[in-house]
Each structure stands twice: as structure tokens, then as C-alpha cells.
Length: 263
Length: 350
Image (cartoon, rainbow over all chains, first blue to last red):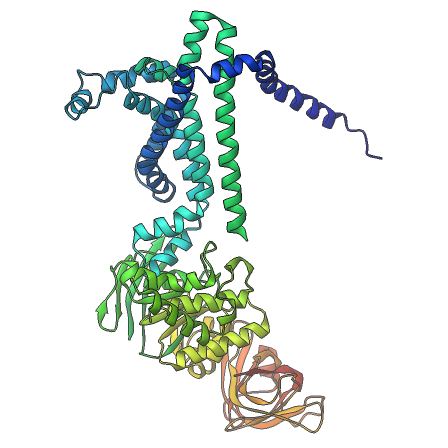
């Protein structure tokens, strides 16, 4: 018979409280939403359009910024340079500042009377009240998740393997794409998923840069303020369900990829 | 020819300085030194993995001191093989060929050829994660040889292997060198040096203290460090033969020894620690089966006690306490008897 351990029991109890704190409100929301409300919401073009907009703008923000952020993460993992601590500190700034403030900062940077805004206008891209603005706001608040995860991944790749590849005649770019990136892939993928997820859940920064077109978090807010909790809840449940579905599929795919790789 | 001229570097508290040596085309050069002596750093400087602080590296007349790693023309094999874990054995060996834009057909041909030389044709489809230490080193060798490097640099390639695998891999290294491949091999193991090197460079605390053939370095150590580090002043080449009893006979060009060994007959070396050599005034009555009459050539101070060199057809060094030297009234030219137990003589197969 196992010995009675009061401390262990306390840990289980405390862990249960933390889990309950996360699960209970979500479960309550799902329970409080009737299937008919959910079907009606799923048939609402405004809701589906906004969920779709949220998914693709966040996806595009992740893909566009990954092009620069992933090699930059490798650079941060490998190279020593003056001011490196400052640079890594700057990367974390979007995480610590209020996101409404981040939205104000982005708006000030891309509005029509700024150089960036004028440049965008000249090529037919408006950043205010548009998908490109949403992408910028999402990327701003979510990019630290990608950079930090990818950097940790690259740090675990033995530098010796990269040097061995260089010694075998590979160019630095080939070493990055054939050795560093595949070996850090798990962390990079995790960072991409985190960035995408964080982008999708963003409200504060996006609502200031682009109230319209409405992404799902903004739509939920609007429904809540205009029609109340019962009207906003089905939209939230639908949005969360779609997000969860995507995460589960992505995690399964990445796990399968890892299993195949380790064989 | 690899020429290293006055190479130096400072890495934190560690410093390499004034490193100079030359390796002839097709030569097998072993850099021998303790852990932390700077052997691996030196190898990585030649390979371009660590920037050179001062001095020059020339390979076949071409200065490669500041050359990019990928353009140096040297192949480096790491102690732990450094295989790419996410690629099959085939793709590991093909990696350098793909970097140099070989065609698929050329790659298949060359990988097949290298796999044959290194006896790994049967594991080409396997993942490096499932290979033994010996197989990993063979793959690393095949991969390093793929681009036909002008010089092959080996960083302790045998240190993680068991005795039998070491023997097999040594034969492979000898075979690769026999094909004309110039090799620089770093190790802390004098047996490897004895068995593979045409020439040896002994490295101590960031400097090369002696270079020469194994016989020159081991039999005539130029410094106390070399003598102490190699510890095998008594080192002779010859042939081991079976005896009538459990004892075997070793015949060198100038002397014979009787020894206890479980090694099969063949070519090799015997090593005798100076501490195991006994000197007497007259023929001793003891269990030692190797008793030789000889003449003292020299007596010099050792790290502890004195080293007495006696000519018994070959020069044998004995380590004696200063009290014994005085009691036996040893001096150059004196006739003495020299005894060695059969079990104190170690045979190393070639």
C-alpha cells in the first residue's frame, strides 16, 4: 500500500484548482450555448467571415514575418555582438506593453500622414482599417513568441554540426537550410504555432488599427457591447472551437512528423 | 604538403603559441599530447573552425590561413563523428557532394565507392542514431573523404571505441593513408601514435616540444615531458613468434625478448616501462627470464630518481633510485646485468 503523503495531496489539490480555473469558465461557456444558437451563429456570414479573416491574417502575419524572424533567431542564438542583451530585451517589449498602447504605436507609425503610410498609399496599400493593418498589429504583438522559441531551438543544435557542414564545402546559407533549420524544426514550428495563435487572439492592438474589417475578437466585443453576453457567447464558442480544431490538427501533424523523423 | 608556421591563438586563459610543423604529401602525422594540450584547437585552426591569432597555414603551397572553412580543402573528422542525425548514412556521405553540385548519378557512384572502402555499404539506408561507435566513425571518414581533401584531419577518432573496433579502424586509416591521403591525427594515446604515425609531433601546454619518427621521439625524448608523457623509452620493432611454453619470443633486429602475451604472432612493437627494468652487478637468480649482459652508456636525472641507459645490443632505459645508483657504483662504461620479467614486456600488434 502506498504511503500517505500530505504534501503530494496538497500538490494535487492546488493543481486541480489551477486547472479548474482555466477549464471551468470555458466549459461553462460551452454548456451555456445551445446547439441551435451555435448553428445559427455558424450560418451568420458576418461571423464566419470574421473568423476566416482572423485565421488568414494571422497566418499571413506569421508567414511574412517568419521569413525574417527565423534567420534572425538563428543569429541571436549563435552570434555574440555588442548590445545583444539590449536586442533580446527589445524583442520582448511587445509582450510587456499594454496591447492598446501597441495599437496606438502602430497606428502612429502607419497612418496616412507618416512616411510608411504614404509609401503604402503610393502602391495601393492602406494600413488603417484594412487587412494589412490587422496583419501588422497581429505581428507586432506575436513576433516575440516565434523569435524566442526559434532561438531556443537553434541554441540546442550543436554548433559542431554546422561547422562540420561548412567543412564539407556547404555555404552558410546551405548549412542554415539543411542543418540548423531541420534540427531546430520542432521549436521553430512550435514558435510558428504560438505566433499564429497569439495573433488570432489579439484584440487591443488590432481594434485600434482596424476596427473594420472585424476580426473575431473584435466582433465578439462588438456583439457583447451592442447585444449582451448571450449574443456574444455563441460567436466566442464557435471561434474557440475553430481555433482548437486547428491547433489539434497542427500538433498531430507535427507529432507525426517528429515520429517519422526519429525512426 | 601542409605547412604550419608559427601559429598562435588565445582563447580565454588558454594559449597556443609558436606552433610550427610540416607534413609531407601522403604522410601520416600524429600530434600526441595530453587532454588540454591544445591538439584539438590546433586541428580546428587548420580546418578554419577557430580563427587564427597569428602565423600561417599553407596547404600545397596555397595560403589557407584566412580562407573560408568551405574552401580550405581539408576534411575534418570529429571525435564524436558529428554525423547529421536527421539524414541517413547515404545522405551524410552525399552531403558534401550535393554542396558541390554533383549530379545524382555521380553522387550515387561516389557514395558507393566510399562505402566500399570504409566497409559500410550495408548500412547506407540507416539513420546515424542507430549506429555503433565504429560505424559512426567509418561514416564520418567516408563523408570527410568524399571531396578528396588535400589533407585529412582526425580528432581522436579512436578514443570512443573498444579495443577490437580500434584495431579495425586503425587498419582502415592505414589503408586510406596507403592510397596517398595525407593525414594529421591528434590523440593522447601513444599506442595509436606508435601504430599509425610516420612522424609524431608531441604537444605540451600549447607548444610543440618535439617532432620526429616514433623511434626518435620515444627512444630519444628531447625533454622530460616527452619522456614522462610517452613513458615508453624502451620501444622496439620486430616479430612475435609462438614459443614452446606459454611464453612467446619477440625478435627485433638487434635483440630478442621473451614475454607473456595473449596476442597472436605477427609484426609489432614491444614496450617496456623503465620502472620494470632491474640492474644488477652479477647475473641474478630470479624469476625474470630476460637477463642480458650490457654496458652502462649514461646516467641522467629523471623526474624522480635517475635514468640509466644500458646497451644490450639495443639501448634500454632503467629507472633507478639515486641510492641504488650509488650502491651499485654505476658509471658510464661499467658492465652490468639487466633483467626484465616476461610479464613486464607489452606487445603491441601492428
